Length: 64
Image (cartoon, rainbow, N blue to C red; front, side, top):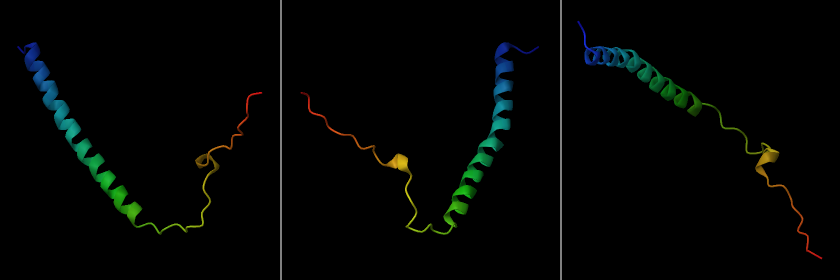
């Protein structure tokens, strides 16, 4: 018969076995993505910036 502590230990061990490959897979995917992004051709410098990057002009009004 298993105690609560034994069950928790078994569950933790099972979760570690399951999650370990997922962490490795995510890390490999991140590295693969970084390497692929590094191979893209450089975009031309004449691309237009989005309007959201520029602050909206505000007019200063003096109180009367």
